[in-house]
Amino acid sequence: MIVLAVALAVAATRQADRQAAPADLFQLERQPALGSASAPVTVVEFADFKCPYCREFTLNEFPRFKEAYIDTGKVRFYFINYPFIGPDSDTAAQAMEAVYAQSPEGVWAFIDRVMQLQGPEDQQWATPEFLVDVARQAVPGIDAQRLLDDLRSGRYAGEVDADRAIAVRAGVRGTPSVFVNGKFVENWSFEGLKAAVDQALAEAGGSGEGGGQNGAGGGPAGTGSQGGS
View 1 (cartoon, rainbow, N blue to C red):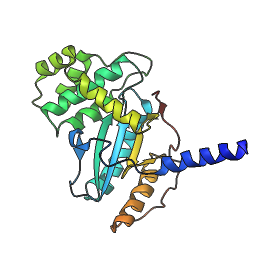
View 2: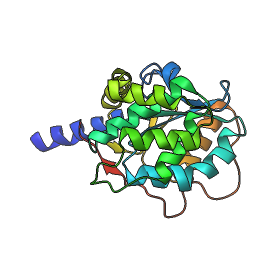
View 3: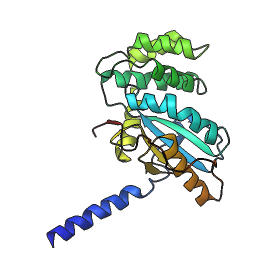
View 4: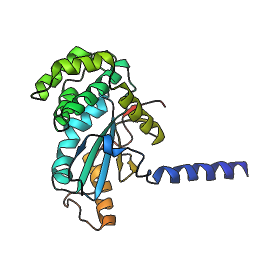
């Protein structure tokens, strides 16, 4: 009887994990967004700028996904901070928030450039000075002194803490963690996301990208940096 009860509890937990998160959980109105506001599918990424798997996703998986689904109006994509690897994870996340406050469009180039220049996971490389220099490179017209002042004062620490709280409530345990219409997608490779988005489009009455095999390929299913909560 005890074994049966445990088995049922595990099954119930797994079923709950497959249920979509509440629509308002992610506070999307305050997150950086790419794509049409009327897109039928919403995709949310939680990331840590020090996470090597987040770098892999940003540089090698995301460009193809953006071309196939975001640029075609099928997906609206959001980025949410989940810093946990080291103290400078928070610094990088605050820099993203500060850049976003100055340039909502330019923040995507900043995210991409920080990932390109990512240092070793076990070293504190994301200093205010480094991040300001990256912003100068990536975002023309950025007010570098304002950004530096924001980082030194911790002006956006509250925004980062709010994002971290969202991640905890969403059950995020590592990065990158990606949700499609509120449902967690374990395989964040292009093929894994394609399968999840095509399914969401079919449920919404839309059409998928076409071509290729959904869920095929050796994508990084189940991999990623692990975060505590």
